[in-house]
Image (cartoon, rainbow, N blue to C red; front, side):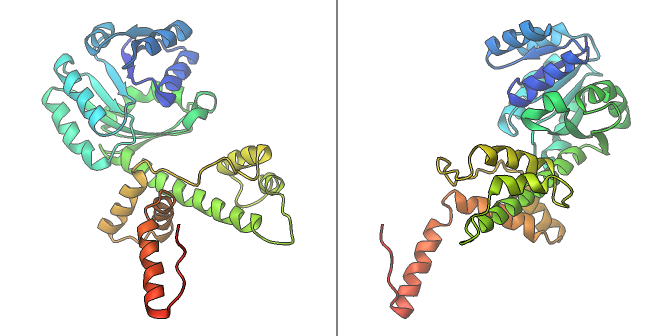
Length: 302
């Protein structure tokens, strides 16, 4: 046993379960040890209470896959792990990390003789049954070493995983993937809003979503999910019009500026999320007052 996963949230926990289904026995660690123990009882994996126990449970050369929040949590894990690891070991950062952080982290790992791999993972809560789409950056030797695990986690041994290139390329590819995801979601949301608001037609949103799943050029898994929730509730009256953003949409917009590549659709989708979070409220109040100032137009007061 040479493989361990740190972080057993929605993604990490199900990745550990999928590896168990594929016959891999691994070590697992979670901030709440009870979660690790419950998963171990379910899968036959080994639950470890701390990083030292995780490292000791694995045979060298080890592969430790981090499924932690990007940023400080992943950085803290590296701080703790690196002194415990041996030359030849490997750390895989499976968080939605910013690709610009990967090269410095790889250099830091290299001082300890540890290889660093960045992995972008897509699949969400459906990955357990359907498999994950994994794009990862690192050396060719690292890719070869990770291949059995990628094949187990992916939808099939030959599809759904790709060694994208050097360190940083996996997270960069996933960043762009999420930017595209923002734009696709925004397009569906705007289109269905247009249809729902059209007077006189009384369009059935659920039936239209189901219709477009068959033969349409816009058919997609995203539309499948849309059809599922619209079949249960088309009004969405209980849902607040608030859409969070994870950070990858912001990084995609910044990358487009740095590279001088126009990405208006993805960037506007990000701006719409800011709008939903109330970030446009003050600006809209300013607009109302300016309009009142030059034209005497009425202002609606709350």
